[in-house]
Image (cartoon, rainbow, N blue to C red; front, side, top):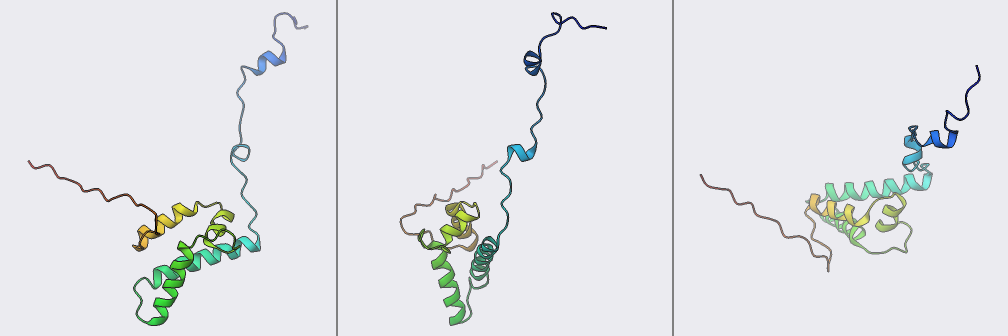
Length: 128
C-alpha cells in the first residue's frame, strides 16, 4: 500500500500540531553540586541564625557579645569579603535583602540605618 504524498503534509507541517514535552530538567535550572565550600557557607549562615535565635535575650556578657557579633555580620554591607553575609547569600542563590528582612522580623531586630521599613497597618473592626 503506497501512501499518496500529496494527501499527507510533510513532517515540518505536522510538527506544528504535535505536543512537545518539556521535562523539568529542561525548564528549571539544574541544582548546583554542593561543594565543600558551599557546605561551609551554609554552616556559617546556619550558625549565625542559631546565634541570633539563642542569644536574642542574653543572660550574660558572653551571650550579648555573640549576639552583637552575629547581628553585625548580618547587617554589614561587605560584598568584597568572601564569607560576608552578602557573598554567602549570593553563592547560595538567596536574596540577601529578603533574608535580612525576614530575620529582622523574626528576631525583632531594628532595621539597618537608612532602610525605611513599611509602617504596620492597623486593622479597624466594624461594629455591629
